[in-house]
Image 1 (tube, one colour):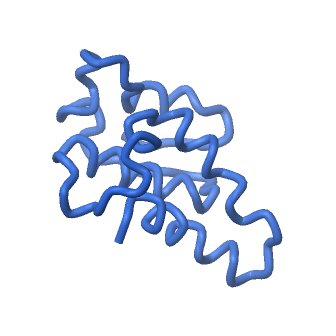
Image 2 (tube, rainbow, N blue to C red; image 1 turned 30 degrees about the vertical axis):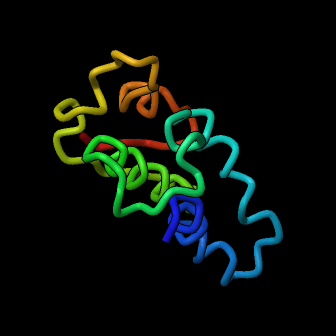
Length: 101
């Protein structure tokens, strides 16, 4: 599966309930995690650990959750903003999602 396939899978519940714009979050996720947009057509098995974490958070956000629970979100490669990538703190600033970290 590709990165994009995985993100679309995150919106499955929304599609199943008949929501017409179930992919509306895709551009938003790519804005939060530009690295995922670069790797859109890449197989997920070839992603680095930090990219896989970004994908997991992006896939969760595709479902438009009211609450997102993250375990140790301040740890790991996603917080090292060395290459201009947005990190988990940027996800924390989302006004539409409550988070327990």
